[in-house]
Amino acid sequence: MSEQSRIGTSFAVHQVPGDPKNKVVLLVNPPVYDTQYWARWSQPYGLLRISSLLAKHGYKRRELFDFMGVDGEGRVPRHRISVGESYGEREQPTRPAMPWHIAKNGQVLSLWKFHFGKTWAQFETWLDDHGFTSEKPPDEVWISAVMTYWWESVRDLISRLRRRFGKRTTIILGGIYPTLCPEHAAQFTDADLVVVGEVQEANNLWPDLSLYEKPPTYAIVTPSRGCPYNCSYCAQRTINGGHRSVRYRTAEDIVAEMRHQHETYGICEFAFYADFLLWDVESNFQRVLELLVADKSRHLHLHAPEGLDVRCLSKSQRLVDLMKAAHFEKVYLPVESIDEGYLRTMGRTHVTVRHFIDAVKRCEQAGFRLRNLDVNTFVLYGLPQERIERVVQTVLFVSEVVGSIIPMLFTPVPTTGVYAEHLPYFHERGWDHDLHMLNGKVYPFLEMNEGSLEDYIDLQRLMFMLNAQYRDRSFQLFGATEVARAFRHNLNNGFAESMFDLDEDVSSLANRKS
Image 1: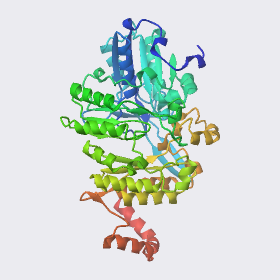
Image 2: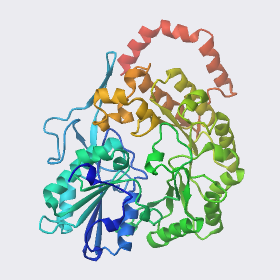
Image 3: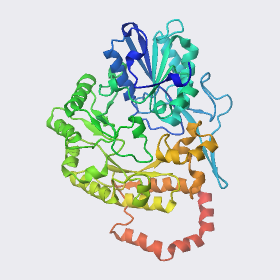
Image 4: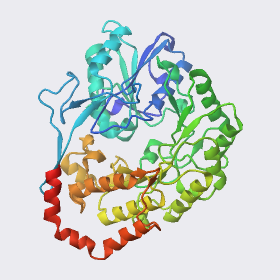
């Protein structure tokens, strides 16, 4: 079968041959190869909706193996691997693990790469224990692949499945990676079918949490799909098949799903994931909050980890008050940059700094406390042609207004405007094939940016330093206290220059202490 014939759009379950009533299916959430991994809210909710769809079609048996399942402390295990090696046939590196070496102008940063998630050996044991042997393979394996720069673990997973089950098992690969890079997925993985885009008949189904032997502590809810905007760094337009419209589920169905997960599995933590959660908010998400507030018999905790549109928040105190009343734990606000001219070059035209300031004021008025992690702001950095000064200004501004900064290293995503603009740069380095090199954590635009490696490390140090709290608050550089005034005064009265005069002595003392 050719690579192109393995790529499927407008996919539906009936396209897979065989009687569902006789089928046994294995669903797999792959491990992650990366330098860092945040385990919170990592539930494979797309795959869990696929399970609900297969149940609807009458599949005989469905089993889930989630490599990324967390332990009792909310962590996933990890072990060190080498850059550039495949682990389709082995668990450990063939030689002592070697890190990524990121270099610029004589400075070198070494970053270790890890296999995050359960081990391959644990997977093999689980397959044996559940009767999935070479003599009794599953009829189908459905795999959900997320980040494009995590593609290597998907390749290795499918390689292992092929070696164990051969061609008797149909392997179906879906998710963001094959949607954004279908030709890459068809070329570099041995999936029988590469699913591009939505499986529409699964879109509005509730995730099937019954697959977990031990119920999870949280559930992810997807109230809507689509976004009317087309920011040049976001791939939502491709993921949503080019649609500009936002398709919202009914508020009643969303709340019914949450009630079911609470009553059936005891879940009280819910995270909303959507391309544009607050679109037409009075008719949609606000109605969800109203229903939840009215239902006083349940004390649920709500989250929106991807952030909330500051323009919508800035316009409605009613909305923010409802969020507080419905037990939103924290508020996350995106502020890519305070340079609005720069934002316009990326198509980010619908929000302004004024919207951000007004949204923060509404959050504070609703009872969310500033400067103590109730309200948090994403600051994006590592973008092409950015100026360090502009990033520092954004960081200082956000620190002063909110107090809590979440640094977000920029990752160029295939099919986006930023990716297309810099495709010759990626092609020259082979990164259009080695997608793992587009990971923001390895600074893909470092070579073309003005900042050094130490500059980018210092940016992160600055953000973490400004986040530091004492007595539930962080320090305000531009505050009204005498300490803040003295700080600003000393930066401008020659004290900074006198410190540089003492630089060698200070460095020598610091080295002795270290």
